[in-house]
Image (tube, rainbow, N blue to C red; front, side, top):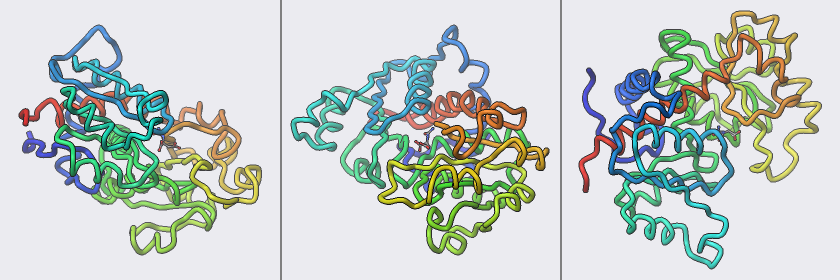
Length: 311
Ligand code: NCD
């Protein structure tokens, strides 16, 4: 068994060692039989209170954190930003300090500002778990993506994974590049020039693909991303149809890469980055990802919050 888990927060993949990530995968593997049904409630978080504080929309991440916390017997409170005192001018920090004073052990935060969880951890004593900060990091998504690939391929070492689409605005891409590189996977990126950060190849040590077909031939797995139009300031692509023509994953394209498997963090926009048929094809691991997401978040909550000595 690897060494204990020494983190009081989960802010980003950057802070985790390869051993930490393996520890999370092993713990998630252990939780898999328990995560599908409310029949089983494990005692790991009994007596702990977890607040979900989502300041950006979310379906999968919020619900799977909630299920994960409940499966571990935690008390879960969903903070609703709309209708809270934020509307009266209260700051984010005041809001979270107020929640902490009510005896909260952990707060799961999603916010549009990159770096917000690093700011909060300077002031809060409870554990902070990053559920997505702006364009920056989304560690539990990368952990569940890595876990899905690990389960499928047995190892991430040397695995060729290409991330396709809006890399520029994607916290999922950043966290995944960090995690995959940690395991010695080969990472590719493919998308229109306007949606790839400058210097991406040098700073991330990734391989850049200009033509989707080349990426699909090279990769063993692809992570397809949504266009984050809510983060785009101006038209970075001519039209959705044109994007689909060059970068959309279709049945025909997938048929020419029969060994490829595909992931997508969701939500999907059919007819843009991929088609419904592709999402439902046997090569798609999208449903697996969602399933594994609960086990990964159980593992994170147990290791960060459950095993923590009260401060
Ligand atoms: C992603 C996110 O919010 O960053 N979704 C998710 O957490 N499942 C990706 C996206 O919104 O496109």
